[in-house]
Length: 489
Image (cartoon, rainbow, N blue to C red; front, top):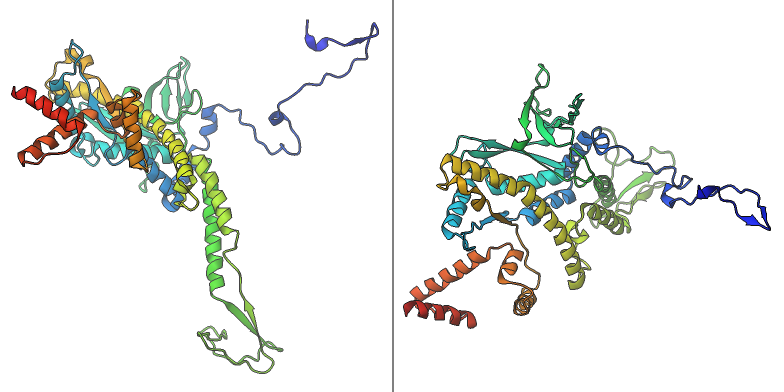
C-alpha cells in the first residue's frame, strides 16, 4: 500500500482529502533567491570538455601576471618537493629478514647516477629533481601533467623521461566505437574506462609556426604515459587547474588594485583648475598644444589676476576600505587554494604563535596529501620501470630473477622543522621514551633517512677521533665507546 494515499479519519467518516505536501531540501527549492543558482548535472567530461582550454589558459595568465598566484605555485614547489626532492630508499631483504646492505647500496648508487640530467630526461635538460618540481607545478597550474616513460632509450640505463604539455593531448579528439571503446579528449579507453592509449599531437597547437597539413597524432600506449591529474569525480578523464575557484577573485582583485593605483597617482598630483568670468582671461604660460598651465613649486604661491579663482581637484585614494576589502578577497582566494591567508598574502600582522601553529599544521596536512599522490602516481611508477631496464641494460649487475626482492622502494618526501626547535626536540624525546615514536619516525617526519643519519653520526665521531677531539654526546658517546671497546677486545 502506498503510504501517500492514506487519509486521516475523524468520527468514523473520511475527512476531506487535502493536497499532499512534501518536504524538500532548501537548496532544491526554486524561488526569487535561488533562480540564479545553476545546476550542474553533466558528466565530468561533458562539463570539462568545452571549458578546459579557457580555464587552463587563464590559469597560465595568472601565473604570469598575478603576484599571489605566482606565490602559490612557488609554495607548491617548496612544500611538496623541496630543495632535495622526494628521496629514494630501498630495503631488499635477505631470507633471514635483514636488509641486504650490498644490494641496497648498489641500487641506490645507480639510482642517484640516473637522476642526473644527462640520463634522466630525453633532452638532457632536466634532472629527476627538476622533473618532480616541474611536474607538481604544472599539475597545480594546468590541472594535469603528462610524462612519457621512454623504454629502451639510448643511455646506459635504457630508460629516460619526457615531459609533455597537456595541450598536446587534444581535448577536441572525441570518438566512440561500436565495441565500447571511446576516445575522450585524446584519451583512448576500453569499455571499463581504463586508459588504453594517449593520442598526442606531433605539434603544439600554440606554436607560432602552423602546419597546413592538418593535425597529426602519435598513439602512445597507456603503459608508457604517466598522466598526473586530480580526479575529483568518478570517470573523470582530464584534470582542471587547482585554482579554478580562486581565479576569478584573483583576477578581479588585480583589476581593483590597478584602478586604485591609478587613482592614487592622480590624487598625488594635486591638480586644479583656474576659472575666470569669461573663461579666456588667464594669461599664464602655454604648452606646445596651446593649453595654458600654471607651474607649481614647493613654497611658491602664485597670485591670480582679478576675476580669477582656483578650484582644486583632490581625489582621495586609496580609500580607507582598501586594506580590508583586499584582505577579504585574498582570504577567499586562499581558501580556494587550500593555503593560509597570511602565507599567500605574505601578511604576518596579527599572527601569533597559536594561530600560526594551527594554520601551519592544517596546511601541512594538505601538502602531505599531495606528496603521497606524487609518490604513488609518479615515483613508484618510474622506479619500477627504471629498475627493469637498468637490470636489462646491465647498468645494474643484479639478477632479474630476484626483481621482487629489489623492487622495494620507500620514497621519503621532504619534512618540516617546527618554528620552536627546542620544544619539538623535547617532545620527541618524551615520545621516544614513552614508546609513541621511534627514531626512524622522527627522521621520516623531517624528510630524512634514519640509516643515513646514523651513518653520518658514525663518520662524524670517527673524524673527530682522528683529530683527537672528543664529542660530548652524553649517553650517546658512552654507547658508541662501549661498542668500540667490545670490537677492540
